[in-house]
Image (cartoon, rainbow, N blue to C red; front, side):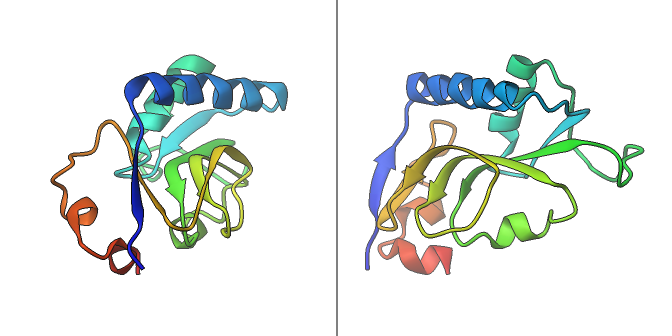
Length: 140
């Protein structure tokens, strides 16, 4: 099955950042750091770091992070959930899009249909993963 491309522009992404940051603030939970999962989570984590005024870290192992440190893990999208599983020791995760069939995260701005491929404004339209004829194969 071929997935339909859904392009997200900067204006929509910025609105989602604001909405997601307000949702996170309403939970009244204090995070010491924000970490963006490379590649897709870096831009969203940077935006949330500014909006929430929480320092962003780029490497979980370069800092004195222990089991008591509160870190918000950020990615652009959760599809199968396998990437987020790698960060299971951190309680809290946030994404901008979540596949309607996937589990988690704690915070999510939007839900994607299973037949959609979300293209974020920082992605190249000529990217191999976007230009594949059968995008389902690209996701595995």
